[in-house]
Image (cartoon, rainbow, N blue to C red; front, side):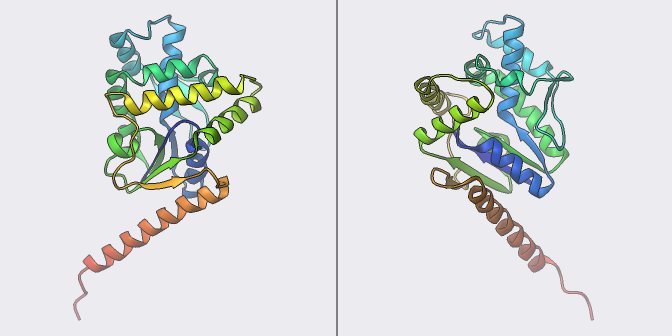
Length: 233
């Protein structure tokens, strides 16, 4: 099974996807971490973030893995879970993710991951581009002010203290870049279940998504039963 969770920055996709994956016994794939990993490679190698060809090459040759049962992201064998969350990586990742060649390279890797196991994959274009035939598609959204507050709280918990206005501005700019880019813009898949998490707790969002998954599984079982031929006798 492939569960696709899309939505803008700060909507809570990563936390919810991890929880849902744990409940299902599936592999959690953070596609945003993949773009961050490429951005980290670019920053470490002083690669110009406008050099599309070099960035695509970095994306294609990078070995990006997600350690089962943990939230660790491995880049060429190195645990970069903390490094990719540093403040300077976020704007770089947003620019890197807008490059068509990078997106194509990482989509190939994401499809390989989805072909190898049941996954809960979150990002911006999972239900529209990466896995348009995913069994379950969720578009998770929230009020921009709430998303900015969540992101600020997340950064503060990691010991960072950016000004609230700066975080809100970054969210607005990210929303604009994600929704207006030519390659794989952020839009809900036509058949996605839209879920507004503004006034919902994590538990409520998790339960809502699990209900969607259970409904799909029940429908699949019923459909299979109707197709099963009656035994002779």
